[in-house]
Image 1: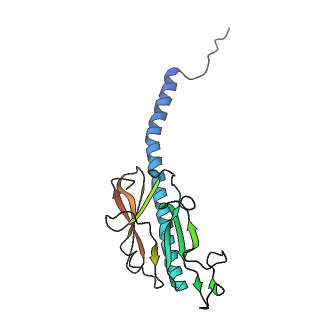
Image 2 (image 1 turned 120 degrees about the horizontal axis):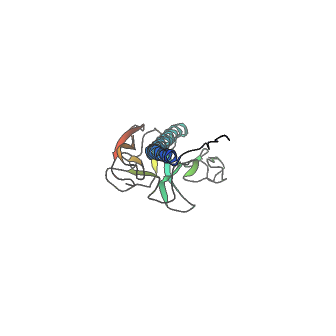
Image 3 (image 1 turned 90 degrees about the vertical axis):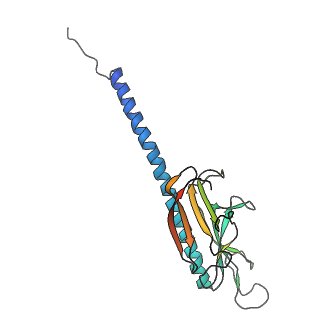
Length: 203
């Protein structure tokens, strides 16, 4: 009678595989998280830069002030830069006659408005909780987060109330050397991005 051997894994081999898998996960998960956070920062910083450049070019093209505004999460809610942006401008009265007949209706609602919404920019990697996910603030020096219009004049330069304000961007809990972004807009209206060290996020 032939002796048939059962083929399979021994308990020792199985434990060895589990240990190796655990080591690989412990190395891979933090690297994946760092990569995901870095990609989120890069993507949303680029969206901010593109939004600023669009607002500036539209201000020059329309010969009219164009602003970037923080969006509310819900209609009538509190505005916050981390919720995305609205690009707005005043409907322009082209014929200088009273009423709205000669007005360029920017948002297509049939009326002539101030701060008509031209474009809405949504951001990724956000979170409904204020202390999680993407964080963006727009401030001058150490001042509090400024939620008012960030406005370009028709010349392409910033208004006085927008000059010197800096956009600061980070991912909650993603701290360390060059793990944040800072977008500064020069006096002539050109945005520039810098990598910055982050000690706390949210700010």
